[in-house]
Length: 338
Image (cartoon, rainbow, N blue to C red; front, top):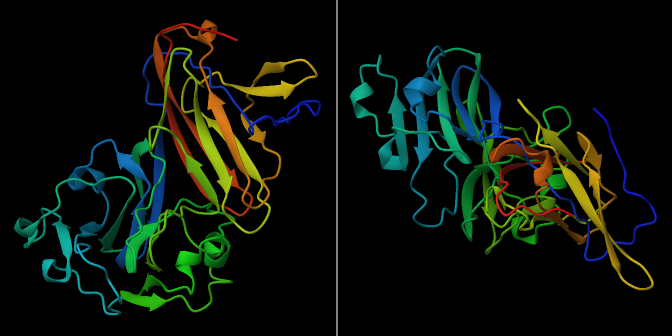
C-alpha cells in the first residue's frame, strides 16, 4: 500500500480537492464486514453496516444470539438511564426472539438496520460477522436527552471519550453510560476510558447538536457520494476538535478498485490552474488546524471506465482513531475530462 503527498508548489484555493475516477459495472464494492465480539448475556451493539439481508434469523444463523432488542421509546427526552437492564416493550424495547425459543411468537423486530444501536443477548461468548453496505454514520442527537448510539473507531488505537467529544460543548459535562454485566454503568473517567467500535452507549446531549466526532464529514447525498458523468461532487471535512488533526484517506477495494484521482487548484500570477493526480491506496492529508474546513471535490475520469457504473468505498481515519466510511456510486454518462 503506497502513500503520497501533494506537490509543495501548489497553493490551496478554497481547501483541498480530489476527484474520483470510476470504472466498472455496479458491483458490491461498498460492502464491508463488521465483526462483533459478544460475551455471554446482554451486549450493547452499534450496527455500522446495513445488512445485505436484514432478517435477524439470517443475520444470527449459526450463532448463539437468541434475542435482539431495539429501543423505540425515544418519543420524549430521557433525563436518566435506569441502571438495571429491563428489556421489554413496557420499557421501550422491541425484541426479536429466536424462532427456537418458546417466546418466539412475541417477536416484534423483523429486520435489522444499519447505523442503529441494538442489544444482543448471547447464550455464550462468541464472535459474529455481519456483511452489509457501508454507510456514513450520522447521529441524530435528541436535545436535553440521552441518545443510545455508537461510532466507528479504530480497533487497535481507539480514542478516549474525552478525545472524541472534546470539541462538543453540548456533551459537557459528560454523562455517558456503558453496559457492563447487564447493568448500565456511568463512565467515571472519560480521560482514560477508550471507546470501542461496534459498541453503543447512552450519551447525554445538552441542547441541540449536530456533532459527529472530531472530524465532521459531509457529502451531498447524506450517507453516500453520488457521481454522475463529469458533474463535480465533493466531501467536506472540518476539524471539530480543539487540537490539530491528522487525516488519512484510503481507497478500499473488495474487488476491482475504483481508479481514483485527486484534483488540486493552484493560483498563479495570471490565472487558476487545475491539476489531477492519481490517488494512491493511502493518502495522508496535511494537518487540519482546529476549526479548519476543506472541500474534497470529486469528478469522474471516464476514459478509465470499462462499463457504465460502479460503486466503491472510501475510508477516512483521523490520527486519534475516529473512522468514517463513505460509499461512492458513479456513472460515466455525460463524459467529460480534465
